[in-house]
Each structure stands twice: as structure tokens, then as C-alpha cells.
Length: 148
Image (cartoon, rainbow, N blue to C red):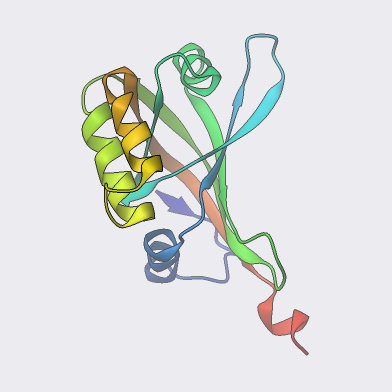
């Protein structure tokens, strides 16, 4: 993973943001008609990869199977603005899809007892894992200048 030279954050700060960020990842890919689209997915970091899960028939899974190049952003929606964005290549596979879903439910929901968790797990047999190998990323941080 290459971090932009002008990034205000070190590799350790980038990794801390990726590990601690609790909102979904915004993932972009090109759809079948050639248009860029964005999808929000739960994620977790595993080294220099971001891991997600989605249904096998989801447009994002099909788009990444056609063309693995993707972009992503992890940033809050409200000011002050800061975050990480980058590019990578995604691998979509059935191996590990249900297990990845379980890890993401644990991360985002805290347990598997809620009605949402139970509904997601009821469809786990159709889940695929998306593994994004991060090629390049950059951080930005406007917190100091926006809070003056």
C-alpha cells in the first residue's frame, strides 16, 4: 500500500483510522453500462486489504467481477471533514463470504441477536467476500482549520 507523499497522516495514523472508523466504506466501481457508481458497505481492515461482504447477486459484486478496479472513501458525513480515500483491486469470492458477514455483524452490531443480524444471517449462504487490495491512498484532515 502506497500512501500519498502529501498525506497529512502517517501510515500508523491511516491504519488507526481504518481500524477505528465505524461508518460504512463508500466503494465505487463501474457498472455494466460503464457508469461509475458508489455503494456503502460494512468493512474491516486486514493488513493492506479491506474486507467486505455482500450478496452474490448485488450489482457491486458483479461490477467488481467484471472489472476489479475500484475506489473507496472512509470519511464522516458531517464537518469537520477528514478521512482516507484510495484505489485498489477487488477480488470477489464465495469462499469466506458467510464467515466475513459474521465478523462484520460482530463489528457493526456487536452481537448476532438483533432482528437485523438474524435477517442477514438467514441469507448468509448467498454471501460473497470482497477483498480490496489497497494500491494507493491519501488522507485529508480539515479539522484544525474548520474549528477555528
